[in-house]
Length: 237
Image (cartoon, rainbow, N blue to C red; front, side, top):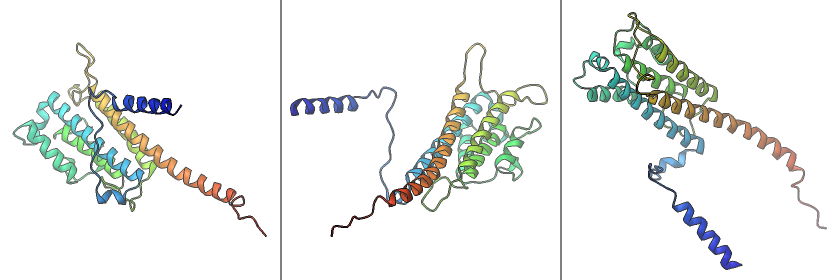
């Protein structure tokens, strides 16, 4: 019996370790002392923010490739240089001159205005990033001292949905799409839609986890009150 149990356990270990990696492996980072100041939710929010920003950079790269006139508006010599400038603005929380010092949803509205004449790709992606970061309290790495509001993050997810819909449906003053994105004609290309979907999904999951965190804390408090009467020591004399 012991031998059979051990064999079964080893079989389970082998099947677990042999998971296919043809399409990539799970990425992990080395533990640091800063991790000790993070709860599970803090870590999840940090990883989600990092992934969302990378999704936005991929969207910007795709949009620049389909709309090369946009990166030229910003004075960059190449698309690669335009991407470097955009990433620096997002990560440095700097303002974009084309957005007239507007931030988050106000900047997003301007970037989707048909009369906007600046680099629409940079303005759109920067505004989306600013909207998401603002919903997280203005930071991108989260620790025990940081508070996250589930409703604000949920609202950010809805804003991303609205922005994606407006991008695919609005036209400029000449009747052309504001930016060429998804293609549904000869060669079907919905990679933009998938990237937006990833961002929305991450934000919704974090909002649900935050809401559940406080709900479970309340349930745990009530359970402790109800269970206290059954956890008293009994007399032995």
